[in-house]
Image (cartoon, rainbow, N blue to C red; front, side, top):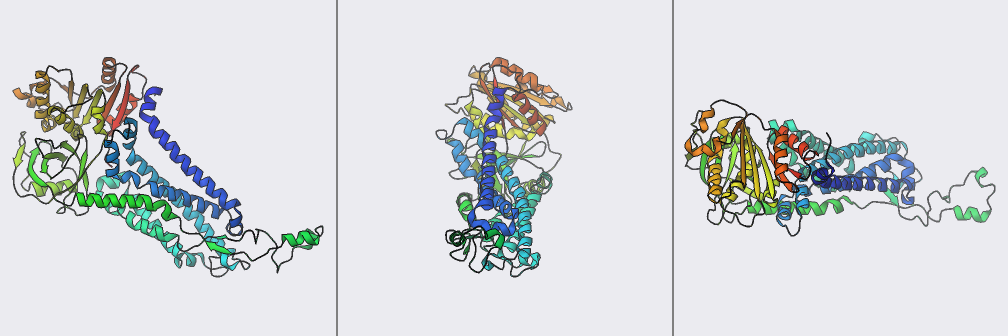
Length: 559
């Protein structure tokens, strides 16, 4: 599909620039380290013993050091939220790059896995060469204890070998459990294995202590390749050299070797301390349980949870992380705020769909008598609730809705939650908003799903109508199943019934109409829903079919 250069730069330019810088840094480190170990005089004898295995193992280790430090930064959620919220520090382009923090985390993780394979393979060759090329001339250079020592014994009886095996096992568990299928069908496995990163970094700090690779410290007194005092050169090589030249070629001292000081901690300690400090801050912040005010049961297995917490502040579009010890002490799950606390009302709320083991067990604790055959109208429950801890709030792309003149919010099913808080902010009359027009498209399979926020939509419609701003909020509802369409026939839901369409949106036509109405403007497109909708909108936002209008695509994604 043909793309527009202007739209492509707006949507893809920033992240591709960061990608190229990241690839460039990795390539530069690899090449620099490779050349240093292949041609450096201090590594002459070590390179002669190990060959290319030395260069590849050290070059890949440099790349691993870089990525093991970078992989932690995208997970510093509080820091990213602070940067996102400080508009004087970060521009909109910078804030949009923060939306790709999870993607960058995954990229660094993949790089760690790939170069770990390279690093391990090169060191396996090095271990074999240490055994075969045992040096009688330079005993201090050897890592093997004697010539022909079993390479397996070298690995299993040395600090670098044992720690290397442990690092490979942990990394394998973390990588395999990070696959999409594992995260979807058994999130607990992903959660518990991913927290092995703490042990991983501890072992990584110890990995270099063994000092397997050594460099020469007295190059001036013992130039690489010089003639040692107890060795004579072949006669044919020296037949044309006089005594003076031969004396200059002889070594002035024996070669001295020393192990490298571990450098991994120099790379990792900064980001690791920053991450640990943030986790400590988050633990203290979330240590007090919240007060569950009410639990409301909505149609289609959706639960609304209204809570109260002292000094809790949040912005529309942000999300929180819930932890219920009665379900699992270590599992934390993100949910978008659907109601933010205000000066007049300190409560906040989330809507969660009962899908998966955690939400099912959590719902049973909240509503032990839950029934699947409930009525259409929501039911409010008041009782004694389990302890619940809240961490956050954290930033998300939906915060940028108010930072455009025109925004298009597209929701699929329960993906409406990031925008519900935005609608509440408009209803509560937030001041100083840049937003001049909001297009809102909500696609659901079942008509009953619209009841989650039907009253909110109707209230916002009436408010804008009375303020003589009917064009400010453009609402379209789509239902893919045509059963029981009469359910929205109630008088109070008439504004929704008139905007309800059966079928799926024609996205190309929709964006064309928006582009024609808002020429020479940047339109923020925000999507939270199925991948099919997201891919289609992303592709259309980069297409050249809407001249004069730039659509900036933003996709909701929890870190």
